[in-house]
Image 1 (cartoon, rainbow, N blue to C red):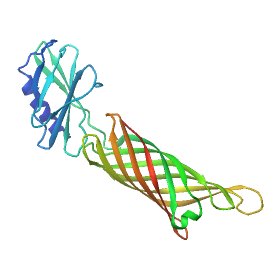
Image 2: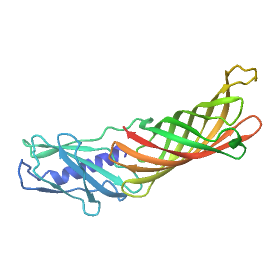
Image 3: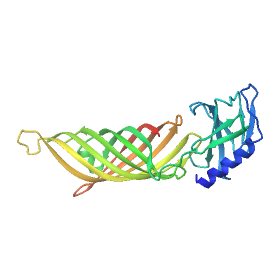
Image 4: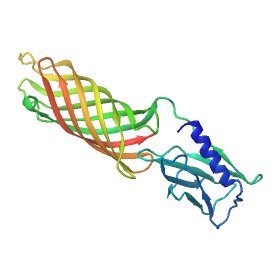
Length: 276
């Protein structure tokens, strides 16, 4: 949200607040808020010393906030707005000044041009298909993924991922197949409901294969390593448990570009997302 929009919201709120007197009382105080734009579909708020409680949500068409037992000397009014197919904005903070009978607003800090938006921790399972199925039957692994956002209101995001996997080999001369891979790519978030969204992702990276076995067939096991390029495709289904945590599950497909052929694997990944 730009500085101009933030200032417009701040000014609009102060216009409504300026004529009110708020005290610590059991009597609720009703406040009407003007949405920042016509694209805002919902507003949510809470009042405490910190924004850690449950949010109360109102429709943007009837943006009336009901402040119950608001303590003007201690409590802070936290307000967030939501545009269609977007995440909630960062919090606007409003403190009531009993000396001047007016509200002082603190605008949310602008986000950096590029920053780590969230972190995913996920296990996954892959199954080779086609000619790749003659080498191994399954691969299991885990990954850590960092999601990067340029703009909190832009559904397009980037990511970087590191993963480790291993699985038994079908070959007589290889005992265990291991792999370390890194990839980077981008995704696009599409909102499905209040707590649901889907996000197709496309990534590219490198895979370091580690094969432990008797490669020379001389009776002695050794470790052999080689690198392949990879393309990763995923379709994440995200469910928001709260502002800080999300659960996700996604079908996953990988293409490995080897010297003489292209190997394909498919499977599923699931895990937890930690929002910063």
